[in-house]
Image 1 (tube, rainbow, N blue to C red):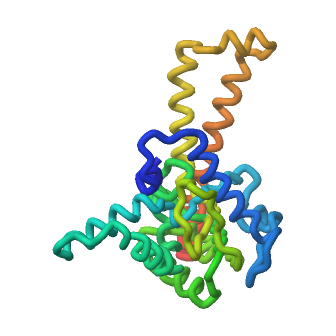
Image 2: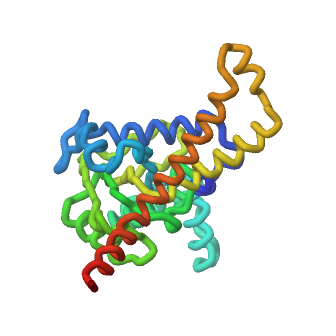
Length: 269
């Protein structure tokens, strides 16, 4: 994934993935454990993110995803370019601390809408958002959040479906992110985890369907499942169901536009 570059990890292991997933789960459940200006209950995710029963697969994004080692290299290179002789290595501690504290609410909010911070590989610019739930942690105030979200709404690259043009749910928790000592992520003053429902996630289903078709055409591994009692027809049924899910996401993104055009034609008569 793209975020591995920011963590400066050449060969990621399950430990690296699990630590990041743990940070995300911690952010999602922070309101259950700590106080904040706007607490979000788990039941509110279903209420705010799921418009239709089958469209219930959230896209998770986390920001900032950055390591201290990655920051050190970036900051030291810049300082070395403008400083003769190059600065001492010890200066990176001060520079890193300043950089972390300066990462504004607007910056981490914008990062949530970039593909390199997503946990699923898809391009949100190819789809439309139905709803977004922004879960902030740390040194965050509602005023900064409102300004950041207002800026997001003005960007033409971020599109929402017509029937839900301002679908934002916000949670603010005062407890800053806690990192694992010696882990991958840098210590930051504020972070945000976004759960969004977007039609762009259909790209993931299409990719999965394609891989299934390649393997099923050769009946790869099918005998193992049939030997355990499954029927071969169940594979075809599952494939058809996933194809229907792709169509559901496609229809959600266009149905409002078509209905609007139909209403306009009726008004003309």
